[in-house]
Length: 341
Image (cartoon, helix red, strand yellow):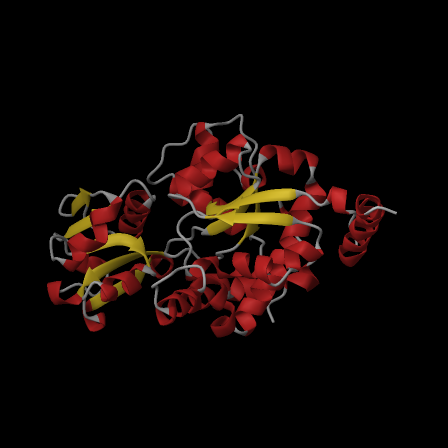
């Protein structure tokens, strides 16, 4: 037998072996594109861990995980079907669906049960709580939704809008302006404190006011599925979420080891900084009392309804969404499999 003939015989056997190793026929293993909603950093750890530890492959999935320029790019990628899945602020999804009512793009897994939105201020400017923002200069950007979230925060905390000096700023200059003292506070996320200290702002001069501590009931980041994937390949969505949950559990058990999947992908970024970012996300946004009671990934409909009511403080809905319009729980693994370790 010639070498070419031998290879012709071996190829089907190799394909069969690959199929048996995953339990899924090789030809049936779908390729999926997953979009983050920003750069690769500590927050991306569980997604990359699902890839690197083979949990996605064990579910018969071949997945690429890519960074994005921001939430809007992720939304357009997934809505168009260019990407199959992504992670994005669910409040941005709610607004996007309201503006594009023909796009049936569901959230299928709530990653951040508690949002990371926060006001960050300089204590040296006399700011230690919401009322101290009266008459101060506050920078916020429309690009990441922080301007809208600050307006909700201000309303819930009776901050006098007439005396507030709210400045719309470009996203790239928001943190530098606070570091340089050009504004007294900014609307951003809790993780921004890490970037501010890297810019030389003393840690004890940074007041972090998580909006969730001051009446904001919004949820945070969620995994979303493209309309076509959700409609035609529900089992694929379920397989992805099973793999993600396993990786999320591993991340909770040992964040120091898990974060290495991020560190090896970002040259020059200190490991300690990304581990701090990950641990902040786990403690402040993922492992809440609601999650410990109900498991990863789900929502409480009553709270979700209140969150949408709060969104209406800063966004005029064409038709106000309901939880059933936005969040589809049928793809979630069973509750017993979603409980934190």
